[in-house]
Image (cartoon, rainbow, N blue to C red; front, side):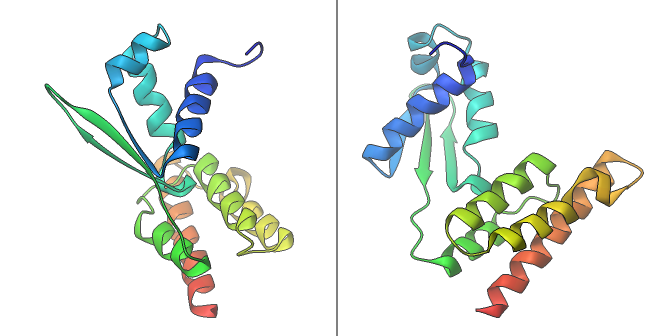
Length: 155
């Protein structure tokens, strides 16, 4: 555990649970207590590391008896992956999330290394050169959707 930050440890714990089953339900407070951290740390990990771009759907219910359900998306092939990514693509996409999506496409052998590198270069902050960060994330999302559509219709 040395060299890992708390977010990495919590992510590893949740991913280990998801290896055993396709979905898990957790109590934010219980997990926070287990790792001796604040509940907002659990929110941060889930919000940043268990996203649709990374192959997860998160549902939550607040209040007494509330829970957070994390579901690993079961994909039957490249078409499913492309459809899920397109359907859950946010209106604004960070460079980090775009990289995660491209990595997943590569890992699932939907794209080649060369195609992935082209996509990464097109979506980089240095390439987009947009005046505001908000406009940049919006443009990146639009470009990613165009890439996904191109891959979907190519099949």
